[in-house]
Image 1: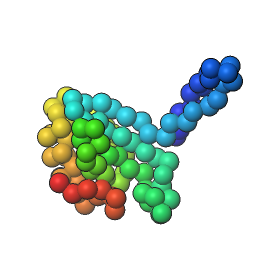
Image 2: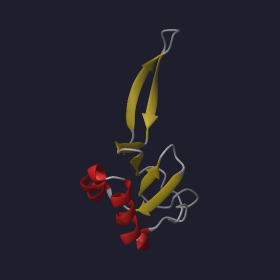
Image 3: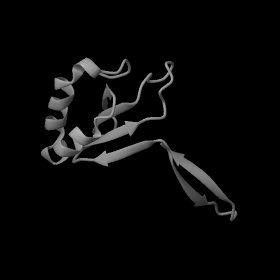
Image 4: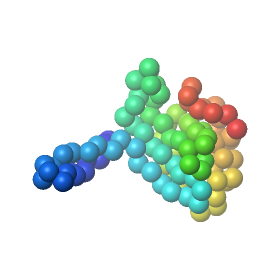
Length: 98
């Protein structure tokens, strides 16, 4: 579900800004959950992405994997990548492969 924030422009006009991903940050990586871009022409499903560095690599699984990744976040990127590999049967068509 998208989050809406109101941003006041320098003109004084307030505009809504929608955020469709929820993000959990790790050390040098982040986890991004997206339940919005589910059209077949986009991701085709709800997705959870493990994103390395400054978006150098995207490892995307279909489904909601936030709970599992949250438990691994403090263990670092390698632990999260091991989880991705263990669940590779849920890989999204747009994902990179390790």
